[in-house]
Structure formats: C-alpha cells, structure tokens
Image (cartoon, rainbow, N blue to C red; front, side, top):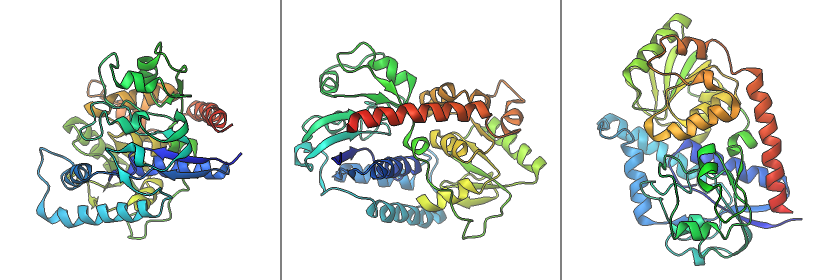
Length: 353
C-alpha cells in the first residue's frame, strides 16, 4: 500500500551523517513504493547556529582565515545536495501544525530525541507534537549524548502518542523502557539499513593509498599512533571535512558526495565520529575510533550492537590501534548487520502495513 510519509530529521545540518541517514531512509522508503518526503522545517535561529558551527567546527580552536572559503564551499555543497532531496513545503520549526499532512510521520534518525542538543534539543516537532498525521512512528531515533536517566514532561507525554518506536542505541532503549508507549526496538542507522553506493574514484586526485581522517579535536595520543601506523604502511593522511594539521592533505571543502568517495576509496579510516565508524563498516575498511565525549554513547552502543569492540581504542591500551587497523571488521560483525537489517526492515514494514 502506498502512503504519503513525512520524515522528520535534521536534514539541513552541515553534517555528513545527518545528510546521508536522511537520504538513505528516503531511498529505502522509495524502493518500498512509498511517497516519502522530508518535512522541511526552517528556523532563522537554527540556520545561524548551523552556519556558526559549520564555519567554526572545532571551537574553542579558531578557524584559520584561509580555511573559511573552503568551509563556505562545503556549506554550499550541502545546500545543493539537500535541494535535490524530496521535501515538503517549508514551514516554521516553531509551528509544526503548518507542516504538510501525511498519513505516516516517521521521526528519525539522528539525535532527534536529544534534549541537550545545542539548538534542536527539546523542540515539540521532533516529538510529534502538533504534526498533522494519522500515525506517528520513530525509526532509529537517537538521544545522542543525553545523560539523564529519565524523561520528564512534556516530552514524556508526547512520546506516548507514538504508534511504534525504534531507537538506534541501547542507551535510548533503556531510557524508554517501561514508559507508557510501545516497547522500543533497536534499529540500524539508515546508512547501514540502506547503504549508499560506493563513491567514484576521487575526482580531485587524492592518492589512492591513503588513510581517511574523519573528525576533529582528536586527543594527542590518538593522532601520534595514527601517524605512526600510517607511516609504517606507506599511507598518506587525508583529512575529510575538517582541518587536522597533522594530516598530509586537507579536504575541508568536501560535500556529501565527495565525502562518500573519499571514505570508500580510503585504505583505512581513523575517526572519533559515529558515522566515521558507520562508513568504515559499510566499506569493510580497517578503522580505529577514539570516541569524543559528545559521541561516547553512540559509538559505544554501535560497537556493542555489532560486536565491533576491537575498533574502539583508548590511551590505556598502547597496541589497540594496531589491532584495530590490522584487518577489516570481523565476519561476525557483518552477520550481525544482516540480522539487524532484517529486523529493522520488519519494523518498518509493520509501520507501513
């Protein structure tokens, strides 16, 4: 049965994970014969916050003046990419009742339930409040770095209106367990549910034998071990989307498609971001992750869900990075991905029935 589905997520973020998980979920729904659009919420305050973050992603470290044009190029690439996605008529973030009416409103993925998000945290829209739709469901919704052990009013009351709930992390499932709503299920990030095609060979000529560095504000112990490992392997270090002075090459300006190409053509990946792990998994690359404080919940729960603990490294384990980079993720990881993909698709099929 064909439904009009509105997807509520952070689709305008200048963030590779936000873009790709929105696009991958839309593409999965389209393959199921659904009429899916992004519910296109806008806010001037959010737009300014996004631009400030995109231009100065590593605060309190100040962006170099020569990098500003490259970050602007990246912002424009994201804007053009989002414009190509199916979207509803625009409506104010503060007025969810003005969004297009849909048969099913699907909230997620991304940190839609993170009450501590610096500019999206707690908006009624992402909890379905006031959104015109016959049914409400979440897919792989995340609480991000939300640390409290309960959810109070009014968000708790709004969540009770959902007909089906799936979350991306075990920490989120525990937070919702026992509340007066459908039993929360675990679901795969949309990029693992509906993997995007590998990117083409790098059009700008990055060396084919390189290690992709994805993230910023890495701890010194991690950068030194990554540099040492890359030199032993004869690999260049290519920093994707952000400046990392210790890399051999800065690809700050990469848009979503260029990011996909750079990640898929890398020999290995060093990251401290959740979607750095996700894309390394997609492309079966050796990878090492030193999770930042902001992303600890997400990265830890992803590794636990898929049995990929070998790829999380810490300062206290001197040889952990060598072991993480020794080979792509184990075959058992991909068996778990296949199992979780089947469960996630079954969840969505029930929502669509």
